[in-house]
Image 1 (cartoon, chains in turn purple, cyan):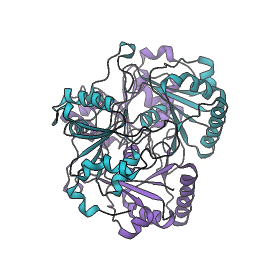
Image 2 (image 1 turned 120 degrees about the vertical axis):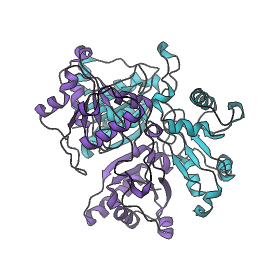
Image 3 (image 1 turned 135 degrees about the horizontal axis):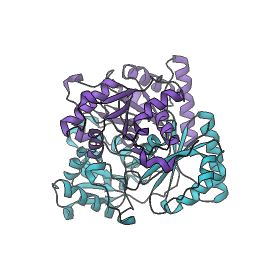
Image 4 (image 1 turned 60 degrees about the horizontal axis):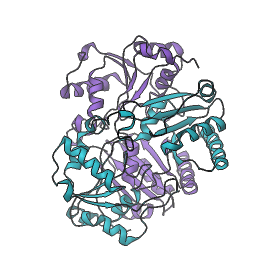
Length: 269
Length: 269
């Protein structure tokens, strides 16, 4: 790696801008989205309002975000003049691959920062690079001697973990479960054993329309004594978090919405 | 577990109140603490301002937090009339043990919520129950049919992960490393292997005065090609995040402050 830290003062910074957690929930159930100020700190909102250059998971949702920012504080650059570059689409559920693989592509994404402008990185929900694309851009920024500044904001994973009451001194986010039914069952049973052996809370997410399938699979394949938690619609007015053991869940039943994000976590005793 | 959900409307809620990440940094280096509004959303600040009853990791730091809240928005109950119960002290670095083990003790902590009052749970930094005490209170609340509401706020772990540029689709927080030098080296080498095998980012924290020891141990025991990241003073004006491979770090050197929290993370290729 080339160390170019001495030159960093001539460069812009890469600001990691937290997004809200209500992606895809617009207008659902007739519920209003939360006020931006209720879920994001003013530090992040102000920083976003001053940016002109962005690297984003999705241009449309980024424009919607910038529009919400503009309702709270004036933008330094009008929305229509903002420069939004989109990350190559990463495969959800794919393991451990950087979403940008060509140096040329990366240099183009980082060009505004290299030219001295602050550059915002933003995903569709929560923090960029956490259960979301963006990590490869951050790593490339470090390599290029660009200062990386993460701004305080929410992550659904740790909010769900806090709300679960499960072990928070040791936990693992293991991404998405396999879609194939047999593989999914095997994976859940293996992760139940990992949780038991390491006393480590396991967290997974899923695209909302598969919530009910994942839930049924968890009830089927986790041990009856395993504590299982689900947080649905975190930060939304209709959001909720509940924890019980698998045996308890089987007794009472639960219907999960198919249009609101959920985080699932468990701890085997 | 007893299911008392039908009675939940007569009970108060357990609100998980995020704290700032500047614990222990008061006045250090002559730097001012961040403005509360820059690091916490107004939703959390407003919710905190309306509470009278708290379960806290530490009463003194909770009063300091409530005082910062009062500088932003008026309190519903004056600080001196607030009811702050303190969690039994959990052992930092101790594995997987609930900090409250007696039902009687737990019933006393949850009494305000059972009597119909909202109850705030707060730790000294970040989210309660995430690398901090509080999880056993949350679990007991679920068991007692008390609604658990996590409020949007920062966690140093995921901010550090976002800032690292390392794998954010699969990561584990493994707590504190052993203090014993031999055990610490073994543990780091084992976690380097876990990272390589699972392509999973590993995160650890340490009390600030041991930052330099942990850093040296990581440089000694991780493989030269392992990517190693450190985030120091997250959300503070003097905070920074950097990532390089171990070989690179050995070449350039790095001095870590002994009075500011750091998060360490690594990913073995």
